[in-house]
Image (tube, rainbow, N blue to C red; front, side, top):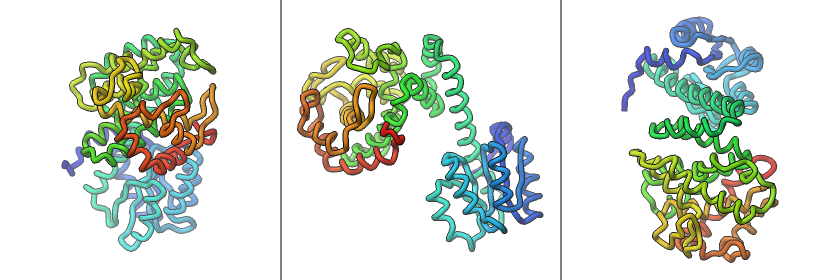
Amino acid sequence: MNNIVNPRELKETARDITVLYVEDDKELNRNTTRLLSTFFRSVVTAFNGVEGLDQYHAAKYDLVITDINMPLMNGVRMAREIKASNPGQIIVVISAHDETSYLLELINLGVEYFVLKPLDINQFLIALDKAVKLARFHQLEEEYKRNLEQTVARRTQELSEALSTVNELTLEVMHRLSAAAELRDTDTGMHNKRLGLYAPLLAQEMGMPAGFRDSLAFAAPLHDIGKIAILDNILLKPGPLSEAEFEIMKTHTTTGASILANSKHERIRMIESIALTHHERWDGSGYPRGLKGEEIPIEGRIVAICDQYDALRSKRPYKEPFSHFRALEVITKGDGRTRPEFFDPRVREIFIAVNGKFDEIFLNNSNRDGS
């Protein structure tokens, strides 16, 4: 693993990242600010937590760097206040060895980056490099969402642009595609996120290798990417679909697979497989191909039961959310529309064994309205 940061590359990535630096030691503040200014165009400083929090609320910062032990308000309390208002804020904490008792609380707050005093320049740059790359990704993601909101009327052009870039395996591109589908149907955002948590949990309990689980976590949230091509009057219809409309809706499986077809990248091929097969059923009654039993790839069988569970739990324009126990009952006993025979018996058995963890994932990753 490369532990050397290229300063020129860091400066290029960091040029549009805004930084708030909080440190009460004036000499260290001055010297570190000078170092930061070689990489960042905008570095705002503060000398204690109260001043830092005031600066934070006065402007938006991509990155916050803070000491722990400061007068008036220490860095832990300041980080707590910041995370309460913005859980996604990226924070780098500079800590002395005798302050390590605070680290567990900071980790629980969601602070991922730590550097020990006295500052080792190389270790500091490594932490900065990681934080800057994450901040840059957040910027690109927000920028893309804004662009989609402004140009939703030009879906055909957006889809064409997605097709031209999908061969490049980058996390940024795949998140952008997911964002495109979510903006079409605002109910699906948390649903997609939860599938990325349910599916690898089942895979782990089934003894699947780590590489498969990682690919599944990456791919499952994009199972419905083909819905980007479904017209709004069908996708967002607040009631049952007609037979003809349902036939159109079913094409999201083949459309999603065609968007991602013929990729040389394993994770893209995984998304293609899941997009195509997550509505196939163990008893052969699913679509689009009516595959049966082990004809359905294992990733499709795993995502199928995760998708069904979450759909039952979720509020939709045409239905109220089911409780965890009602959803479990539907999957294990059936309700007329859903039957246990739809699901791989082994996958269903493991789902039943860990059903409490599914409930935890749903409750911990839901909006207030249950979506």
